[in-house]
Image (cartoon, helix red, strand yellow):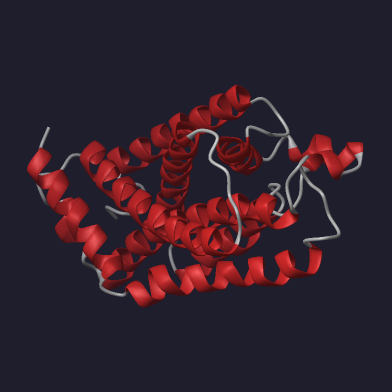
Length: 253
């Protein structure tokens, strides 16, 4: 294993988004907090999602996870598509880095960016509302696994996309709808039976629900079921990425 090469490429990916941190870190924090400002203030006294919690307390972990998911996806997808469009992906492919090392570097950087934005949202939310910590272990576990999963999905989207339009289709027709319908803004227990059943087929729901469990020890489904489904999808996405990278689908021709 080429640890030095993997570490060097990981640092390059982190520096890439850090060099434009106003756009990649601070702007997503501000836009996510607007949801808290609008929905939290308007619905705080009108909705009671979980027992003993205000709506704002319920909402904040969901918004943190939404920020983690969307930014982890954006990091890996934008990096690979930019490299393809500008032609510098060739230099990466001829370097002595295996597909697995390349994948680890991409996913590692996506996790760092996702956690950085999520931490920013959490800290600002913490200043205005009283949050509880039931288990830091569950919070960190779901944050890292979910960021890795969406980083992997972003890498697939970047590899199979030929231009920015294709990548925007992934973002607008898959990632954003699945995120908004994952229980970020509501508990699925408040939905009619049909929509409750439909929500159970959305993998994003399990990431949000498991992450929220780490704060309040309350969730719509068992946290172990959420962990099983999240980990299973991460394994599936990892295998797909390795197959694409080994075969060089749309990146070597």
